[in-house]
Image (cartoon, rainbow, N blue to C red; front, side):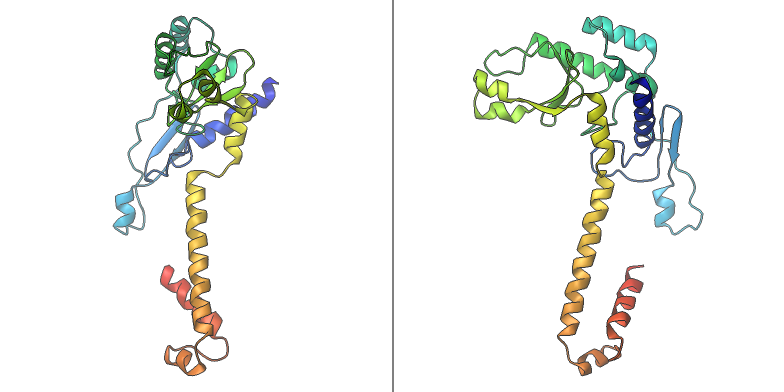
Length: 250
């Protein structure tokens, strides 16, 4: 339904504005401004923060590619020799020229066209296997592409590493693996998954919790006199130690 995809495009556009969440690459340095469609998110200068300035100034805008024009889309379709599926078309037309989405994000439109044309002329199959004409690579090959099935809208993952274990037709067929029912499901799954920044934050928080538990366990094994020598009261020493650790981390 068009209404449902309208909402999806808006949510993708919001996330595409954030350099640390616009794709699944490791978090970028903060302090940049990213624009996607009608949305924009501004950061602050990293150097200001490191210098301890109380009122950091906005950093210069990062170089980002805005939405592609209708003329660019028409030119791409002429080279591809087919109409770009409407939902994919909207992502380029309304949000930006790639770089956002699962993995490394969508390929820039020109690279998408060049990749498709190159594979049809010279397939990456080791023994002359032809690239499927119904598959359009939409993400960079690292190590493989997410591909849109032009016939039924399914998203398949082309796993380049599969052909490292054999170059026959069976190995070639194993390269293409189901990933999502369609483009909307592919994007929805990405939106619902933690961003690299969120995953990194979770890892750091878990490491801090584990370290705190090890510290507390070590002090539980000490005598009251040993804790007192460290300045910890016998009653309420756990709370005092936690307060001390928290103050150190600030």
